Structure formats: C-alpha cells, structure tokens
Length: 309
Ligand SMILES: [Zn+2]
Ligand SMILES: [Zn+2]
Image (cartoon, rainbow, N blue to C red; front, side, top):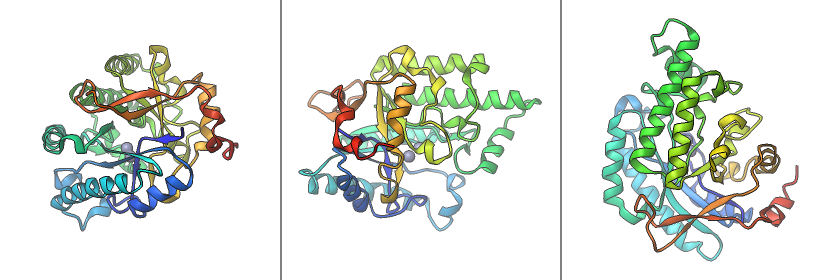
C-alpha cells in the first residue's frame, strides 16, 4: 500500500509546478494507493508574501485555497476507482493571526478538510526554509550575543511554535518535524539540552493524541543524507508511529527519492508504517480520519520492487 500524505502543485502554490490533476495522474501511474493533497493555507499579512508572490494579493491566496479544495474534491471523486485521494491542508504559523484564522477556516470548511499536516516554516516571522540568506536573517533576529545562543534560541522558538500548533489543532500528520535544521543538517538536538527537552515534550504530546510523524523524502532533494526527521529525532523511543510523504511540488517530484526510504527506515529501526484512512468515527480533533497500520509485508509490494536502489 504505497502512500504519501503531503503534496503541492503549481496550480495552487507559486513555488511548485504543474496542475494538480497532473500530480494525481502521476501518482496513479506510479501505483500509489493513497495520496494526500495538502496545499498551504493562505497567509494573512502582506509582509508574509514570498518574493515570487509580488503580483499576488492576500485575497488571491484565500481564493486560491478555496479553488484548491474544490479541485481536490473533484479529483477525489473523478479518480476514486484508481486511487484514494485524501484532501487536507498544510499549516502556517507566522504569528497568532495564522492560528486564529486557521480555527475560523476549519469551522467554516467542516468535512471538506479531511486532515491536517502540521508544519512550521517560520521563526520570529522569518521563513526558515526559503533560502540560506533568509534563514540567516531568522537567526540574526535573535539578539543573543553568541552565535551558539542564537542557534539555540531559534530552535527553542521553533519547537515552542510547533507545540502550540499541536496543542491547538492536533494535526494528524506532523510535517517535516525537524525543518529547523534544514540548513544545518549535522546539528544534533542532544547538543542543546533545553532544545532536546522541548523535542521530547512535543513528541510525547503528539504520540498521546495519536499523531503520525511524517517520514518526508523531500529532505533527500535538499541534500540531506536522510529523510526528515533525522536519526536523532528519537521519535521511536516514545512509541512514535510513522507515515510516508513525498512533499512533492509538482508531477516531476511525485514519489521522488522513495527508493531511498527503505534503507533509511531500516537504519533507524522503523519497520512499521501507518497511513490515514477515512472513517465514520471522529478522532480527537473531530475529523473523520484515523491511522491504520500497514501490512507488515509492505515492502513486498511491486511499487517498492521496481524502486530498488
Ligand atoms: Zn512544509
Ligand atoms: Zn509542503
């Protein structure tokens, strides 16, 4: 049962490419059985627009997000006999405005948002995954005198933001858990005891309400030697459960680097995988979707055989 819980398309995201329907068709061609469509929620301040969005208004972002939901549900019905599409969203947390508006949005949209990928892409209002200079600006926004202290402050702020997001929305999927070290992949949380404590707190909280941690293959194309999260993110020591995502940004990236996942999973001792399935019973967040454990022999599926490295 090959699956992915996290994707974007150029139709509804300026830094992605291709039509959403092309993404879906590519997922079908590769024999994915469950595929999640999860566009970013709108942002609500002009200063939060990305450089490539200089022609875009905040109103456009909101319209675009509604158009995404409409199109995603159309595709879900249209291709129902070929693939199980799940329709979700990926969060943003730049200021409290984002979380308050997300609550309003979820109230309004009800069942049309089937699940949430809970992600943090900003610290102190600065994007931490846009490019290296912008990441440096995020780091410099902390006024501590020593560089190590600024690094620690950024990590603490990231995991506090993540905790707040988890507390308020109980996302079913924890998106790229350790994106905060995208540009510092050799950083180990154990070297920052206060950070490690927050990492553990977040993991424990997420495990307790039943979240799945995403094994996100996008890290490979960002020049990591591993997926997100990296080995030391210790989720497994708290009985964490994992689901796969390609975090694709267009048809070309569907299933990208999935061939590297089995070896990575084996190296960190993960043999069990989970995926989301719609049900009649609400979960703890009131959404009608639950984790299901994948057959132990998931690696025997043809999908993986044709991808042996
Ligand atoms: Zn993301
Ligand atoms: Zn994403």
